[in-house]
Structures are given as structure tokens and as C-alpha cells.
Image (cartoon, rainbow, N blue to C red; front, side):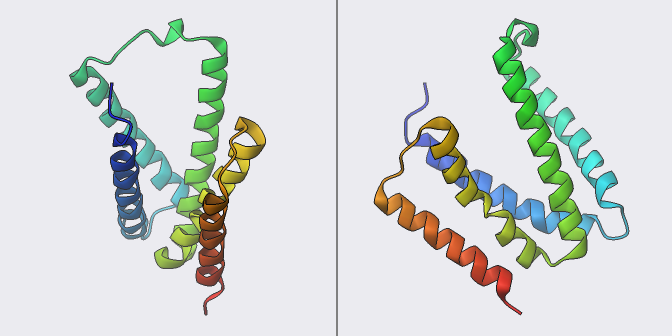
Length: 144
């Protein structure tokens, strides 16, 4: 089992790769429809993940998963797809340095949704941080 602090490393790597996603996508979608670009990216992700799962021996029968797991993974996939389509469209129309901060409003929304749907209870200092993220998003979004 991974150490309890390893999530921080994975989350930090996620942030780095998300930042690179915006930069690479902004360059890559020049002269290409955003939806087609999203489809191409999705195919590449599919092949990379399939190779990773095969190489690490992590394959298991997905049909053995519960209906609940399938339902929520399916909903997550639909939300991811919608997010990607919207993100690429926004990148095609706007500057990456303006699109990415607004996209990070998801940090605030995750906290709110986690309270509403998962019963999580952030501490007051956590709410302060969430409020600062929201304020930062607003400052970046409203800049001229």
C-alpha cells in the first residue's frame, strides 16, 4: 500500500501535467476544430493507458465490477468528456493564461460538491483556502 503522503506527490504531478495540457493544447489546436482535437487526444490517452495497464499487469475483468461502480465511472467519464470539450473550446477562443484559472474554479466546486454529496466537512482553514482560490479565480477572470 502506498504511504498516506504519496497522494500529495500524485496531486502535484497532476497539476504539472494539467498545466502542460493547456500549453500543448493551445499550440496543438491552431487551425484544428476543438472537438476533433479532443477526440484525437482521447484516442491517444486510451492507447497510453491500455499500454500502461498491460505493462504493469494491472488488468482485471471489468465485467466483474459492480453496477454501482460502472454507473459512477460512466458518469465520471461523461463529466470528463464534457469538461474536455468545453476546455478545448475555451482554449481555442481564449488565452491559455485566462482559460486555465477559470477552469480551476473546479477546486471550489469540488469542495462544495464534496460537502453536499460526500458528507465531507472541511475545517475553517480549509474554507479560507477555498475562498482564496475563488477570489484568485475572480481576479484572474476579471482582469483586462
